[in-house]
Image 1 (tube, rainbow, N blue to C red):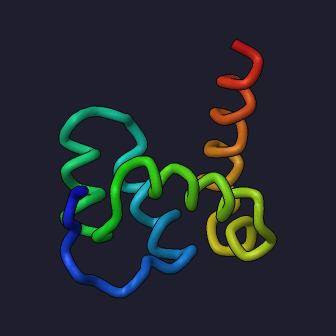
Image 2: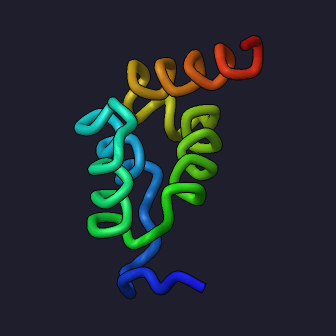
Length: 78
């Protein structure tokens, strides 16, 4: 089992701020997720989708939240 750095759980704002700063998915983004947020990439994307659909996420950063939701809905259609 992978061991991530011991860090406090990222807040909804942390997740949206990180996604805004790193919008493209690539290998270096996965490394940054682990290093900066202390969670695995799969968990990051689960939490990000949940936050993007939440009122708190939409209030914190409506543009990033909408982009994440739209990207998710495009994947469901494809």
